[in-house]
Length: 113
Image (cartoon, rainbow, N blue to C red; front, side, top):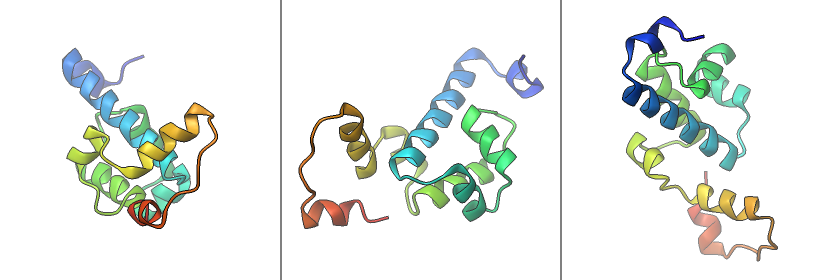
């Protein structure tokens, strides 16, 4: 069942909201941050965090940006959507299920969050 906000948006914009929500969830998993920890750090309720991650377009952009900053301080919305975060590369490696070599000191520094 669509919410009022979802019904008011054209399909292209709903797809963008869904893409953003999926990127947030993937980043949170990559950074190994729980949903409740991210919500707490962002000053949001757990319910609002869940709505954000489900792609509810009724959540204010300020809440979304605080949630993003709670997961990855300093990461811009543009970089989130570009998938430009070292932790996402590490997540992809973990998901492959292959044996992974230890990170070098430089690689660890790049993942410092």
